[in-house]
Image (cartoon, rainbow, N blue to C red; front, side, top):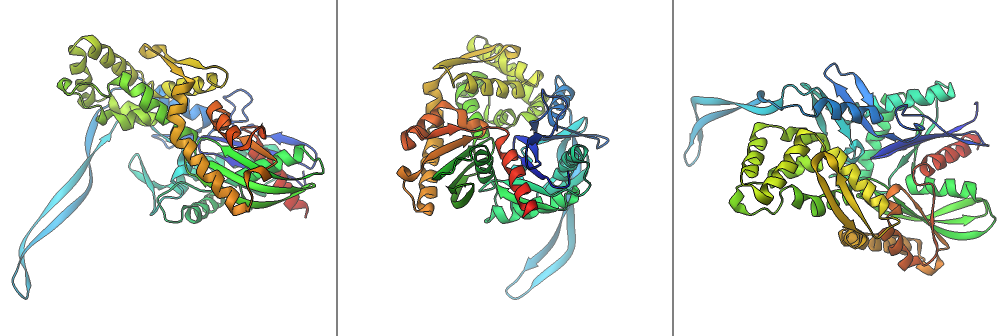
Length: 457
């Protein structure tokens, strides 16, 4: 393997890696605990000994370790504030000898068996220096991601046998983040993290461009056309318009937004399921659902609701009987069984079933939940996202100095691009030019092909 291209699609939700040797594309087995192992959940779990577990095993360990566990929050000193007393007259501030110091404490889960890190890519563009507390030690985001990328790098080395590897790594058009220029800070952090993980020969390519490369590699007809790539995954929506000329291409424009499939899941959870868990109950019940919302939506922290301060509210709700008792019992079961992750998986399954039918059910037997979910409801939830799609498509066309009639084909990739309402909306814009392309592996394959071409120039 003296001349190969290696592509790494390090996604918000899933990660895939591929090798291209000039003839065949081969996908690297990153996750031995799932099916073929090609698609690995982008997840890291650190236990109290700081032993790392990655991928699907990380998710399983987190769920297993926290299911049914009662949470006991204890006070932990996090700092102190010293106040000096003085007085002010017209011209001077006179400091007295009197002062006092207040110790600042916070509540921590002292029995927490491990920390799960998920969707960490979304923090890369944050302003400042994001840090995460892991059992009393502070870790910057680069340190957390280094552990995950070091594992991926080792798996690649096992496949290739090369100690020094040139990696082509995917990047979104627009990183999410709070910085005024999230792309610059995110790419700097990714480059540093890759280097820390032993990947000292890395370059970056936009993910929708990589998807186009993999498509053009498989479709080598000698025609000239304008292709729009619609990459709609878990974390971001990325668009790229390129001009294909024989077997080469030129990027004409890019556009994107920093939210996608995960955002849709959250909206379904909020609109369809929150009312079944207590949102909107009459104030006479003295139940404050707003205190539960964040930890339900972020399934990694749902176990934190297994504290007396929350369970007491739920138990009081159950005592009212009737509908309140049913809702309270369902919420208590979800908390005790740490079932928010399973509920989100049920949402994902319902989205898949709506790709072929007009209605389905969101079902979770563990909490006695079954509710009908229709395609019309899905489209209503998607309405804000469809407006965003209109905007970024218009941006991409304007920057490319094209109109929609000049687009020959629209290549859809990423799991969220399979949602019928999304496909139908694109069809309203572009007609019958929509094609689905290798939703979960295409980007990694394109990165590998692009990397090989660079190596052989």
